[in-house]
Length: 411
View 1 (cartoon, rainbow, N blue to C red):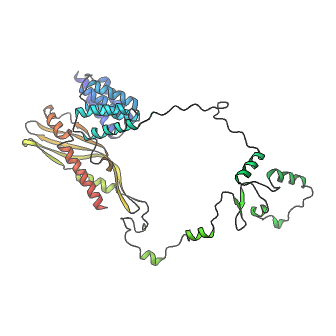
View 2 (cartoon, rainbow, N blue to C red; view 1 turned 90 degrees about the vertical axis):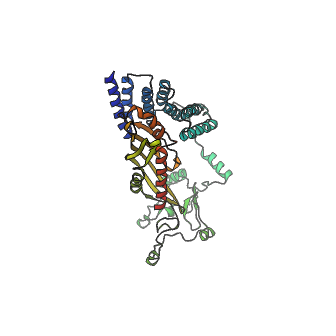
View 3 (cartoon, one colour; view 1 turned 90 degrees about the horizontal axis):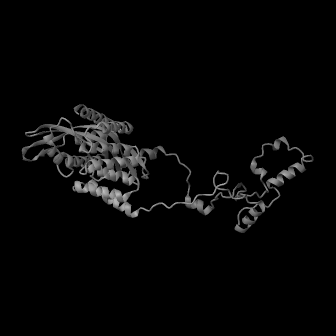
């Protein structure tokens, strides 16, 4: 039914926009509608729909439904490598690492040149070898349904005995709380009211001569917590004077222009420092990537990056202990165009959802072809745009590498 096919294409187009905006609930709803309307179940097109909904659900943290969609994708098309990739991702999040490794093995059988699949398969196998099922813990007994029972309160006599045995603080004078109360009530009638001049005596004077539980006397006669650590003269001499000192104008004028390791002038100690370089990095990435071009063999034409779209992320240079780190985390979409001899114009996108220093030149790439591209061009595009081993993707990877080097040189 042509009308249903057009509706599916429209739903897919709107879903791609939602994915680009990371509006995962909306993307899931649109892919669900497309799956319901799709007039050709059990085909590669159906597999792609399930795979894309799996991606949306995975991004929402719904890993079990994402796994169900991944299984539906590979059931619809056993040659759909991305379906096995989605299955491996979901299984890893569910701690089903052996299944994840098997899924990545299936993906590798379909795309043996994929460095990403090899890397993920190795990691899943390592995780499976190291993973231990959590042991079931026995339930904790409770009283009245309000949690575990509390231990009985220790009596005063037991506390004194324990403190005497361990050398801890014990109140030995007559001025415990109970003694104070008894003494106050017994002598209330006879005790004279204190003079007004004594009303301002501080709490320190009130504790003189009293050995209270949990308190002790310092060398200068102050009463303080038993756990207060008093430094002796030897320790003070070792630490030195740690009182904050004002910077003299003459010293400020003589400060170097930059600290060792590239930090700011004030950061001569090399403590942590971070500088935001997102604006520079965004402009440099666009400059490096737009215009990347590869020629097709036998004079068949060329494929070129036409524009960089939907660039999000940030970049910063950090300095710690006089060592620099060049950090960045970007997501973007590259629009490519080409002209293939005897076939005609073609265009599409390469989406890079995760570009960071940790990728080490191995990026997850989502390949899309515009619906108006002639079907005869698919073979050439699969070989030189979709493939990570030759053509446009390696050229883009090289351009990202050049961006990283320029980043380090600039800062």
